[in-house]
Image 1 (cartoon, rainbow, N blue to C red):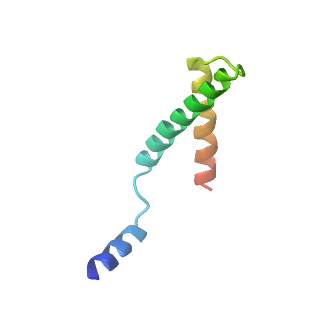
Image 2: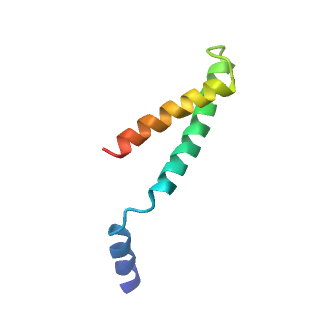
Amino acid sequence: MDDADGFEAGASGTRGDPRVLIAMNVVLSTLFATTVVWGLSYVSGVEFSLLNVATGAVLLVAVSYAVSTR
């Protein structure tokens, strides 16, 4: 029981490394943007290109960063 209490106390007292959060945000946003752009290209909505994926990823990173740092 002491280990569980110690972990909870340690985990609740730290905010973590922001570089890890930013890296995860970039990777997951890029994967999601790739999926969305691929899906839109599948239904002839937009062309699947690196520019479209990058634009979607940048927008997702910016929105998720703004929401998470509120």
